[in-house]
Image 1: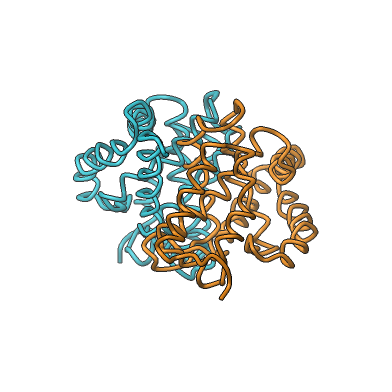
Image 2 (image 1 turned 90 degrees about the horizontal axis):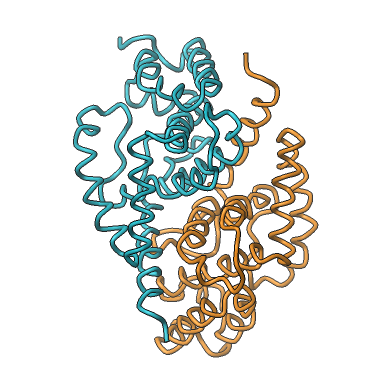
Length: 199
Length: 199
């Protein structure tokens, strides 16, 4: 006999499997296919594990890992929104809030409240953990683009000015990692993988 | 100027992207394709986040999350070994130890030692965190199989007796989750998704 509580927890775990089918604009580093949001979330958590020493502020790493794991689950209902899609970004908060209500609502109420609070903290970017997690969430696609010769930038007509403007928030979480990001952007531009402006 | 330390950390993060290309026997829950080990690692960490209350012993959840994130990275060199492949399981330890040496060795030495110790702890299954993480690593494929009508079991000629024998270790980490696993196995057998023995 399986408890009602455990049934709800399994329903949530089963539903979250759908994140494996949500495709992002970025490619895997071998260039063979688009990344999905589940494997991106894993990679983001690995970044947190390895790079936490570069946070501007001291951190509760466990909380950053939890944020990395659940930050994108709302995309199961709301889809992935490209960081350079301004219209999509304007629509995103309402869609994702409804998704959070449904998805975290599958859990027992105590866990629903706990995980929703972690997701809302990530979105609000007011705590050291959320600010750093958000910085890594911007750094990871730059890494993916740099190592795939700017594939997602070029496919979507993105310029160096756009990349620098949209990702300057990385500095809020880590000045060191913003320096790293700028190095990759400059190098990509010099190699012809990222135009200065739209032609 | 990027420090040598940060360069090593980025090399490790870039190399780990290859885990996204390591395919497992199990399917994603929509049945459309095989799971890869990166998204499996994410899913395993989500299981840990939601199900930690069922551990037989009290846990450091952060350590379980770290184990879930890195437990399969050795597959980048050693490949995924099917849990029912006895010959493969016999070869696995030596192959994976060499992989751990190379992969964690990409990191600065302090982090290489830290992450390798976490991986070795997971493999040894002697601590509450490792025992529970290993239990979840057995439970997750049973969930995937149950929700894909036993697809990976049937494709590989696996019987109910094999599933029960190979996964009884789940009880070492969680008696509650072993009850859940047995319920799914019994139900799958009744539905005709898992034969009692090889025909």
